[in-house]
Length: 524
Image 1 (cartoon, one colour):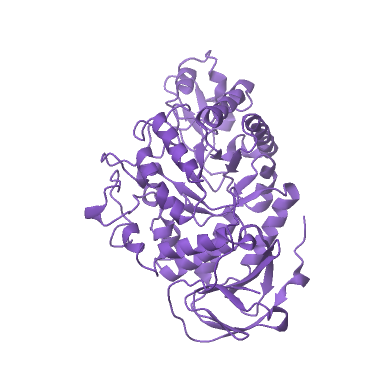
Image 2: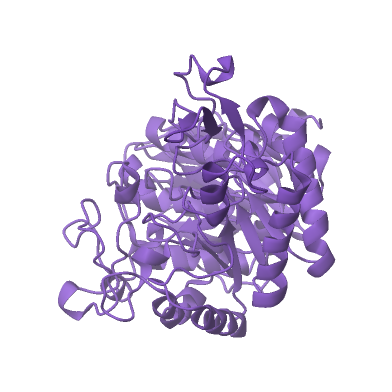
C-alpha cells in the first residue's frame, strides 16, 4: 500500500474567532470549460415509485421520470441510477420475479426504451439496479425448485436439511447491510430449508452452479445489448458467496465483467460492498466502481462532532488502498442512499450543515452520487419507507407529478420547500447543489485531481489541495459552529483568486475568514 507522504502536508496556522453568518453561495470567477466525463461525473439515484407520477395513479413511473430529464440535465448530472424496475411483489422491488420485464406499475419496456433514448439525447447515462444475489420467492425458478426437489432449478438455490447444524443456532447478523438474524427459511411440507441472507422473501441464488452463473450473464447481456442500458448497480455484491468465501466473491465479479465486456466494452459496473477500504479494495478488479460508504460515515461524523481535520487524510489513504489493486477504479462517493438515513435528518435539519455536506461531497475526490431529494433537503429516518418518500416538485395544489403511494412522515411541505419554490431562491439548497455541481463539472482539479491534505492547527477545518493537468485549487471547509481566521503562510500565498465561497467565507490579503459551516475554494 502506498503511504501518505505526511511530510508533504502544507502547514497553516488557524485562530478561532467568534462570529458566524450565512449567505447565498457565490462563485467569483468564470468556470473553466467543461472538464468532467462520465463515469467521472455526477450521478443521481432515483426510486422510480416516489419520483414522478405521469398518470395520476399515485405511483411514480417511467413516463414521469422521462418528463423530468430536463430537470436532471439542468442540475448537471451525467447519469442516473434507477432502483429496481423489474416485476416484484414488494414496494421496493428487490425481490425480482422476472428479470426480463418492467414492473407494470412503472410502465412498459417501450416506455423504458423511450426514457433511455431521451436520456441519451441529453448526454445522461442510465444505470439500472441488477439484483443477482437473490431472486424473489415468487420467481418461477424458486417456485418450481421449492415444489419439486428433482427440478432442474433446485440447484439454482442453496438448500440444507432442517436437521443440518448450520441451520441451527442463528441469532446474529453477519454484515452492516442486513439486520436479519435468521438466514435459513422453511418451505411448508418440506424437510429442507433454503438460504436467504436478507429475508425469506429473497432466497439466495447458488453461484456454485455454472448454469445459474450463465443465467446471470444472459440477464446482463439482455439489458446491455437488447435494451441499451449503460451499466449496472450490483446489489449485495459482497454476498454472492457466503462471507467466509470472500475470494470467490472477487472472482465471480471478475468473471461477470469479462462476460459483460464481450457485448459492451465500456460497460459500467458499480458495486455495493458495505465495508471499510481494505475489504472493499479487492472487489475493484471486477467492480471498477464501488460506493465509498466509509467516507460517507466519516463526513457525517465530522459534521456531528465539528471536527474535519482528518477527512482529507482519511480519503487519501482510502484512495491509496484502492489504487494498489486497480489504478483505474472509480470512487463512487455518497452522502446517503436508499438504505441510509437522509443527510438532512442526520444533521437534525440544520441547513448550514446540509449545505456543507454537499460542499464536502463535491470537493473531495470521487465521482459523487446524489440520492434523489438530497438537493432539496428532504428528510428521512428508518424504517426504509420513510427514507424513500415522495419527491416534492411544487406546492401541493400545483404539483401534478407528486406521488401518493404513501403518506410522507418526514418530507412534507412543512419541512421541505418544493423544487419550484427553491428554484427562484438564490440561497436555496437546490441552487447550492447546482452551483457546486457546475463548479465540479467545469474543473479538472475537482473532477480528477489528486488530493493533498493541508495540516491545520484547528481541528474544525478540513483543508486540502486538488491538482490535475496544470490546474490546482485550495479548499477549506469549517465543519464547526465556531468561526475561524486563518493566515496563509508564504508557500500558499499564491492562492489569491476566489473560485467559490459560501456563508461569507472571504480571503482578505493573506487571511481567510471562515464563518461557521462555511467553505472557500481558492486558485492561484
